[in-house]
Image (tube, rainbow over all chains, first blue to last red; front, side):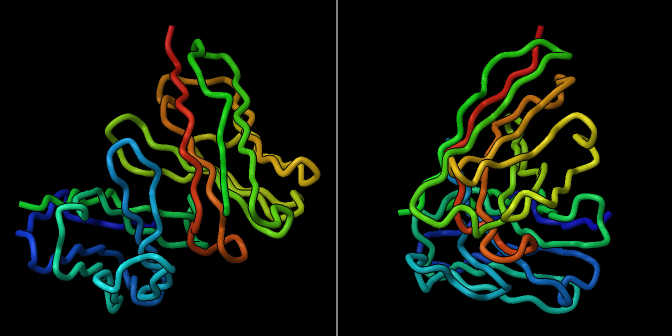
Length: 109
Length: 120
């Protein structure tokens, strides 16, 4: 089955740029979606189809996808961005069809 | 405003059954694929099942295949998950989520989740 690999944690100072990676075999050929989940809350879509941003999501959130790595970039990080972030793809060859990465805890220092 | 509200969670003994519901409002429910995603305590998101817009096509993760059944009632704008032969490892918060596209897209709206605890 298809596997998505995320770093367990990323730390960044306020005002700096955070980059969260999502690795997968030839992930660049797939569409990647990103979700933010704060403690005790449901996930929220922050990036879809690699780099599109839903309405209401700040422009500070951006995404890219190429080769074996997709990246969620958060510019000018704020304390309120502290959360878990999950990447997700659809994989028709996988028993699970929908595959999530293991999640990355973003800590704002 | 799109709303998804899950209900039906609770404590159940191993081997027992439970039916979850997800009441949808604020959009044309019958036009969208829907999914169930679960999250064990302190763990990540795991996809469970999906159903197409008219209920004629379903898919399941291997871990629940043969035990869980997804269904929908478009007249009632409600999604269901019938869970049988429950195991301790099924303990999780269960979320319903709307698929923005044709069953293989992003999940643009999520419910608040309902907790299922399988324990004796």
